[in-house]
Image (cartoon, rainbow, N blue to C red; front, side, top):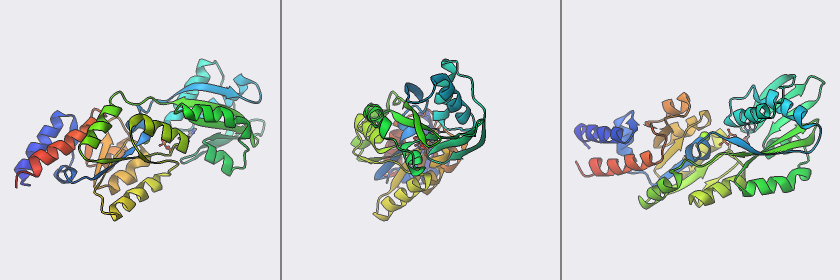
Length: 292
Ligand code: ADP
Ligand code: MG
């Protein structure tokens, strides 16, 4: 494509709220065969809230106070949801020390009276040797409803479970259909658990997904697809997505996402909609492949 046709394409893309940082990214968009999408904050709104809480041990206010104190130190969107839930139930944040975050897993600390606190996903608690059997039935029901389940253990004992709901963006289903109609294979990658991921993928109409991924796994999955000869686009919003966005043939960052994600991507979706990805691909095909 000539620089002129690229400029026309960049201008057209801007009309659709698609900001192209380098013309190469827009040229490559016409060649994409696979589109990898992050779940949280990309397919979903990324503004989760607590919809169910089940306290198995101890007094509810005290438990919520510990949860609130634990999440004060985390920047994960789930942390904001749990703190809001505790506040709505008028729970005072408890005293904690030795706070630490576990990437892709959750948070941990010690309570003022010396109890070990662990809050996060099933993998984090199981790796610490916590028996989740007493919460299994509740958790299965929540996962069936596409909830992310967060577990609290106190001194190694399962104490509470929370169901977190993060609604789909209003246009996710339509945009994915459009991308598939454009001939793209759409693959969802997420750090969330298998069951929740399956429920969301089913709702969106995506057959291909990988769950329980750490940030480096997202990056590795893109490399693997490229090794199979796929030209891979990646859409993401989080700090966690930055390596994958940089590795993809074209990275698309959600405009409301983190700065790190935006800096790692060649294209920014100002309106935060996957329709922007389809628009970029369609414009790229129309303006850049036909004009030589
Ligand atoms: P994603 O945002 O795609 O779900 P992450 O790697 O950020 O991926 O997190 C993976 C999982 O770890 C989350 O789905 C959640 O279950 C758990 N998790 C991470 N941080 C926290 C936290 N601060 N509080 C509770 N759970 C957390
Ligand atoms: Mg995300």
